[in-house]
Length: 402
Ligand SMILES: *Cc1c(COP(=O)(O)O)cnc(C)c1O
Image 1 (cartoon, protein in one colour):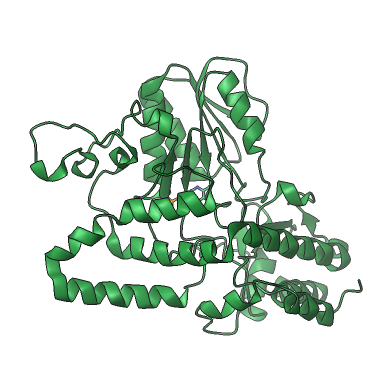
Image 2 (cartoon, rainbow, N blue to C red; image 1 turned 90 degrees about the vertical axis):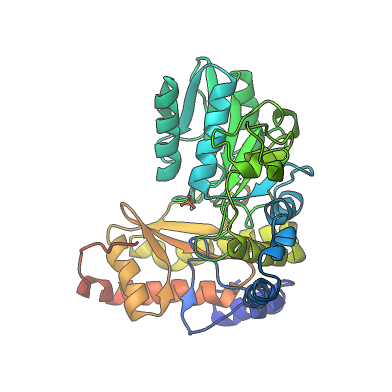
């Protein structure tokens, strides 16, 4: 099909999920292609937070009788609808970083061997895994990319399911099987895949993930963690707080953890954040994760088509895999002038992507609120400004948040 805006509009007209866009706040007329960093606010979230404020005002501390269930309820929703978990395996709590620490520490307490991740993994993942390995006196190994594992005794293998920079999707089943063959527990980071890819955790042992990206939970919304049922009685939460205690309000003398997933709670959960997580995850669940993932593949395929036609001749290089089964919902384009192109898109063209060192512009296409016309406009404006050299007018210095 010829490249034209009419074609983009025809794709939107045929999109079964198109109606979900109006369920979000759409203030401003920026073309938002950074939903993989922070999703847009669902309208339902504002209502849910107002309702919480009302419950707090009227019920005061008695409100805890309902709020206390939220980490399990929000976790269950994510587990059941979005990542292929069984009941009682998922919990919404803490940050991704803290959950990584808890699960990685529990894994090393459980068995001997080294820790493996990849050099390109997200910084917090590498920092936490290196720190946990050092504390436990274990070898910490970084390989080039998720895949071939070192031929040595391993305790824990941890990769991101979708690479935050390139958008590459790892082969979860094959890598999990390889980790098991080395005697390791497999810990997946789902930050860039949950809500964008139809995740099937299968035999995976452990997982963590983010809710403020494709699940639209809002800035700093609590994360989630997953522990496969057969490990729950054995693995111990290293932050043994009172919310993981079997009979919490007995206020007993010694720590005696819950037998199930609740043992991975630590302290008082952030209720406003959890209310927002639930509202965001419900929207994705309502659309159906298989449908959402199919739209992500279509949006990214369209972006790659436009890149080939317009941007490759201008010095861009596609970093994201072309195989639609090997990528998430963002497309990464490298360019020597990536930083200034990204700034020019934001400051001069009304397009909001983000930049990752050293030279990558990321276009994230959150499936429920991104139109094919947005993909068209974002890449069309990139083409226009690079062709005219507009980016060369911008400063080379990096900002505090990129
Ligand atoms: C976004 C992201 C994180 C963020 O961790 P926080 O604890 O929420 O700051 C971690 N890992 C990956 C792969 C991410 O994409």
